[in-house]
Image 1 (cartoon, one colour):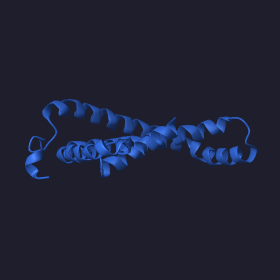
Image 2 (tube, one colour):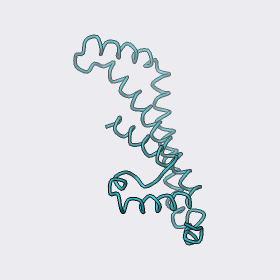
Image 3 (cartoon, one colour):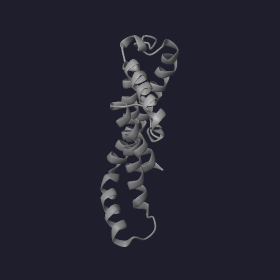
Image 4 (spheres, one colour):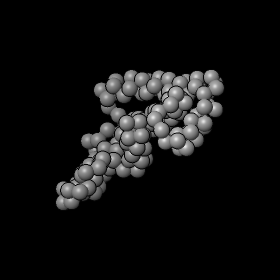
Length: 144
């Protein structure tokens, strides 16, 4: 394929998409700050020690949910949300800065999927965007 085929693909993200991308990025940063503050608040209010004793007690007794297990759940949920949101922010920065690269790679991947329908099951992106997508999917499953 020559480069003339992709001349219609803009180098940077179109202005109409930036109008939506920037507020989404701001909300994501606020979400990351809130989840980090939740974990730090739990950590500084001496819930960090109850986390270890709760995990040990849970594995020893394997009995219902105790009050200490709730502290572990909140801490682990805050960590999972922080990791997922960090991956989302990184993916958004990648998406904004590498617009043309993503569009061209998605088009090439879609062309491969015409003959082999199994290639169309996953996302069409490749490289860092694909890795960040699967990190987010993993943490969404952890949170559910």
